Length: 402
Image 1 (cartoon, one colour):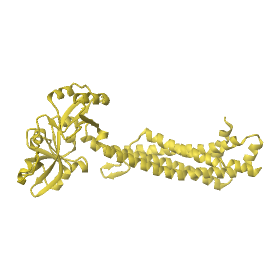
Image 2: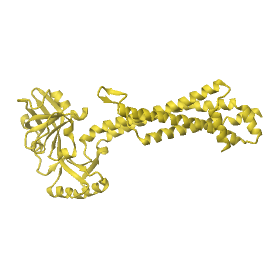
Image 3: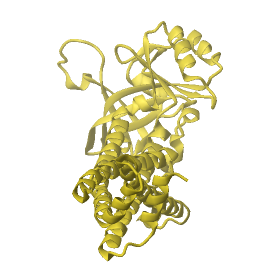
Image 4: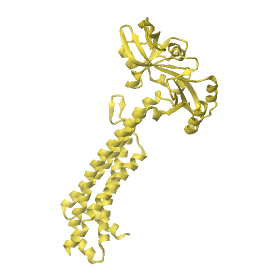
């Protein structure tokens, strides 16, 4: 067995005659243990919150979304539809129309909503119907809409109420001044037959309508669409699918995936995760000062032993390595036990919902191997640095004893 490692292990696991040294070592061990446990639990909690937040948008966003490179609309011909169907990685394609509208119900208005016209394939791409709180989904040949829960509250409108006519206004396309305000808008009357709830932002934004209703209201040409939303097969190659789509549309479209469609949300969540990691790492640095302190106190306590080792032929590097390995072993042991306890807490939360956000919703946590590696690497790196700094006191002790 390596000489330095053997002595370091004895120093770590053998009680010192000086009780203060034992207390300092225990405090250092608890600091490493608590730091590793807390950092992993917090990272797992943020990973769970991230997955929970994105699960709502995943109901709304397709695997890929084809958008016009310029303007609001682009042409989607029957020939292009056939070509898209021939791409093996595409499972379903749904064409949509989107435009800002004004909603009016009795004496209440919502001026900042978006009308989204969807075809019969839309639910095969996005399972929005699973988010329905009340009512049913659209029938393509009827003047019906499905509204968000936020819009429903603002307008005080229910589902399929007798005589409840929701009016939708959109600016009429064209140029020049309009002398008669009534001629400035296209309008259509519809009935709300469903109310959905995805998240607060989307619940106040979208009104779903049949594709033909939106097309007529906006006075679009038969082949004009705002976007094509695509559902891919499980083993699809996204890069080759993107390339094939661009060739069909002569590179006049933009193709976005879920991450690109929610880039602000992803950036916000990743920034929060990084900020929490850095804050807890700073706390760990402070906690691991105890490791360096424990090493220095151990060096002072073992001055006679150090002199004996020096007389027996141990050089400065070997003696310094003893205390460096002692600090490293202390960090490793405390970090491993902290991670084991943290993993048990995460698994218990997943199985038994120990902490609840609401009476029916458990705090979401996600066990990820990468977080385990990140925490262990952080603990060991900081522990090794602290141990190295503490072990450098050996030279001064030997010089003093000499």
